[in-house]
Image: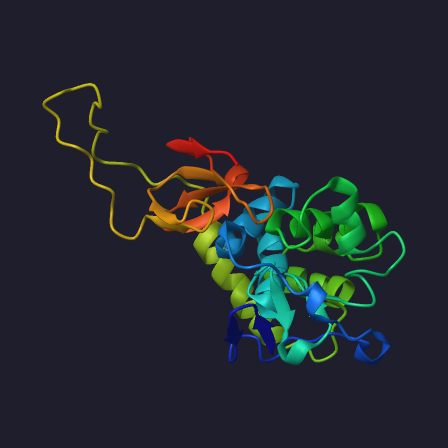
Length: 260
């Protein structure tokens, strides 16, 4: 099990694991994530899936990765291992190893070298791809060769996460859920025409229930497609269907823009 900052994931993460715990240093309070903001509220599953598809992986391969990340952290970039253990972030990189120590291969040095927050979802997704495509040895070839969700789950589980007791069946279940939710690339047609906003007789378009997001940066609820540069990490997020997503994973234009 892992502890996400602010809440505990009990049943969902019961099988997640971190290897070589005895070799890790004990983390202290200075390595805990910042207070929640747009970055912590991001719809991580969809953003992560779109990210890996954009890198040229197939829907099944991308879903296999995200299924693993759901088991590790529920795709929360501010995830901290349950009980104060070494795991950090969406892939539960270990303090004393790939989170902050491994030479040329750790989240903190990667983020610091680019002037970005190590706790941001976009940073951690970029770092996963850096490990896969640049560092090497983490199973990119096996992922690209995977033709089923199950084989993609195994490739990332065995080569990237390198877990002991992996709860493989849960990872596969989550991966299939991701594929079912986001793998259909056929757009849903919109039956009703969009009202003409210049028509003075047209009634105002209501904001559908459940599509607003609360912005910690602005300290207010904002409507669908509002784009905010988060004070917590300086990155851009967009309100999409009631959840914050990485601005660049949503093709819809911003209805309003709020820079720092």
